[in-house]
Length: 217
Image (cartoon, rainbow, N blue to C red; front, side):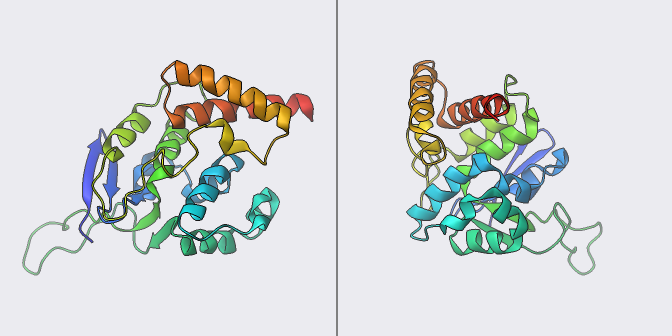
């Protein structure tokens, strides 16, 4: 696999130039972040649904239920793979390929093994891993990933904004009631006027919903 490799401090961003997929396991390896658990989160589902629809493989409605996703995680992940959202490459994440016969050393770094994600998920995953729930903190890693993926010339381009609704609030349609969605749209417009990216707006709105949940429960 001929990959494009970027470095941000000790973090490695490996991109498949053919389809733009990102080695998520390697990207967040130093944070100890589980990519599979990220895929199970309620806040990730709107983007998964959007990507699957664009790829012509809509996700069955059963996966909207977080308890079903958790109980049947292997089946859920297989569904995502079939929809072209993820792929798994066997091997040790961040390991080394064997050195050529007679060559010294441990060989070169093998950037292929790991769980690969559609590029529309990479920025939010990087932000979640870096800020660890502290939504007020900036995420230099997420900004780095977003810049690295922007405007890539790939065979099947899937821009970050093109794979998800332009309105970050509309990502939550069908998950909240009409009044809450209207409130989210007003907040989204304020954030848009403030110059925040789609992924930053989505993260902020998600945090607002999570703050409201305990009061409404």
